[in-house]
Length: 265
Image 1 (cartoon, rainbow, N blue to C red):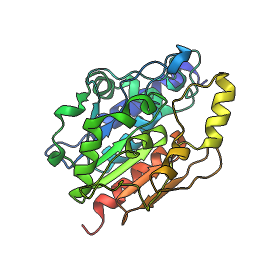
Image 2 (cartoon, rainbow, N blue to C red):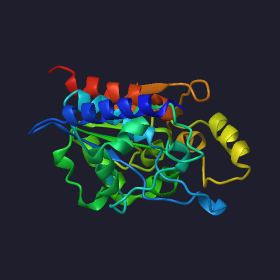
Image 3 (cartoon, one colour):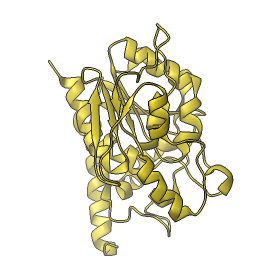
Image 4 (cartoon, one colour):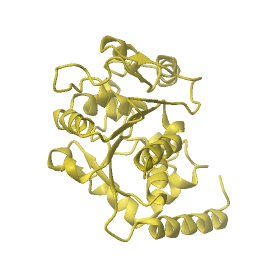
């Protein structure tokens, strides 16, 4: 844990920096999607979005001059997984300054509290979509019709689609105009079965309805992954399909999205 004065100074600097980085107007826009699901299956444990999977790509995108809007299936406040919240006793991100700063900054904290319902999103307003993970995502984002339609539309329009960790569940049942799966014949990544086994052992219960790595093969995709809990990304679809293995891949995914959006400009 950082000393209180040091932490306050860094948080203030980070908050001011994030606010200063916000584009004046009008900006190129990226949509960041988060879960609305707050309970970890039958365990009764709280879950939600993994905070750094929002904060890390957000920083990369905003610093590159993009406006980032946040949407979720239900709209309103997104639940934050307590293990990803540095303010909680069980928080695993206490050394992550962006996690502290994202919650300390009124603008970003408000963005998480007032997400737009996915059904109200105008796909023509965005150049890219980034789907954040956290265990909540596998319960609602993987079966959210509004999100499937949104991803399919953005892809058909030649835009960039990116996912992180359990957010890759959002790609599983996206179909194209010809009825084929978007991910068929493509390499993707997400939270791996090896990582699921480690997490399940730590929690002590079977808590997910399915595993992303297992399901991708059923849709004709090739699942690739690195070592557990190490940064790893995959790019396919001519550079427009970007996936990150887990929360440690957020910065890399953000940078890859920026690079894809700026390609040829």
